[in-house]
Image 1 (cartoon, helix red, strand yellow):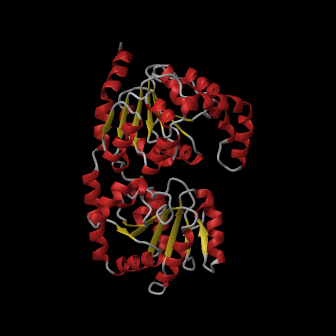
Image 2 (cartoon, rainbow, N blue to C red):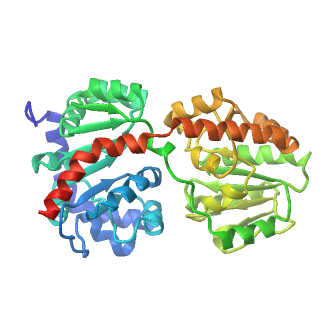
Length: 432
């Protein structure tokens, strides 16, 4: 790294090294909150019982579920090169998705806590020869250790909000500059992202588009789909997907308004974090509505008003049955969730005003009338009612959404093209 070590980075290293003896206490606290796997805690200290495969190991890291899903098509393609693959993430939910969706033979591990000792242990064991970091999960000790070891680093699907950019620029410009200097290449989603990364010190920045627009349709378990479809028994259906705290109340308000027209309406609430299922069920009961939870192995019956789908890996089943989906994370200042998966499986999409995480996607969809912005619960109920009344209008929204999604694609091909020299060199070295 040129220009010496910034004081902020040196202080961070000292602080994290001093905190290392307390790591087990932190992990135990997280374990009690359901945020760690008991048998996999050693991975968070950089330890692994999984042997390193022979050959040029490619390492792909994404913080959580969204990043992992965005990277899946890329992982699947790299897997065809015959190169060993390691995928890391930091959450229990992403580990569950990895178990379900990663190709056979691809290794998943939890990312180590960002202390110098744990990072060194992790890199000593895995010795990656190419590291691909998805979006913005940049841990200082991990990044700088890779740079010191001359491991090629590439940022994939890079994004940087205006808020994050301003924070880095004002508070720690030297730190983010030092981190980005370790990256050979930054593949980013938009011109705005390119400008922000360039201003903060990234050396080579290329605009490739958003990988999340190229994800294949979610898998649909036909047995589960058939069971749920039978339980729905032709009832009007409305889905609120990937909801966050503060949104479920608004969904219930919309549900009540819709029932005035559709007394048999069934609303499915799919929380972004399944562990919230119990709290949502309690909220529904307190509101005087009948509820059941999918995590309890129950299907809705004729008396059920709200079905809380607090399980993992079943969004494909739900989207394939849903005529209308409200995408959560958008009634609160979270930044929205990915609408592409719902659209690809035939759902017309509604969303709130807070969609900065997918600003370009939602802007294109809204402009093409392929999705609709609703400001509050009243408007949500009004538009959902219109679409339930008029199947032709809903189908026109869906068709426009699918056309827009197809037009926005191509990021995967451009990302693979940029990575081709790295992957070809690893494959050539393996053959040699």
